[in-house]
Length: 140
Image (cartoon, rainbow, N blue to C red; front, side, top):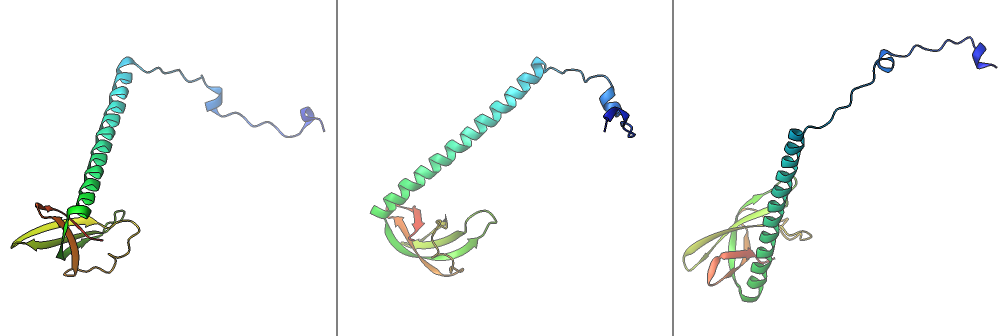
């Protein structure tokens, strides 16, 4: 069958394809500076946030290592539990040393199922530094 003699007519092209070509657009110097400033702000803000989180994690690691070697134990009482949709469970607790009550909170370690049965007013073992009881953590 010869396509030239076909009985089917070719469809008309839409106006979008038959009109003039779109003009080319260039970024001005002001737009480029604005974009560079935004990217720089996101980069600096992200770097500061990441640095702060790393510093906090290192400090907590050092404190827990020091608590394991030099800490004393005390019985604490769970005062509250926090559950988040995308965050691990947090336990809030208090304990008393020498007549002074100290408070603390800790997130549930990953892979540790021992905190799943905790409830408010349950007793937990807390490790603290005798020289500074504000540095404390539940003894998992």
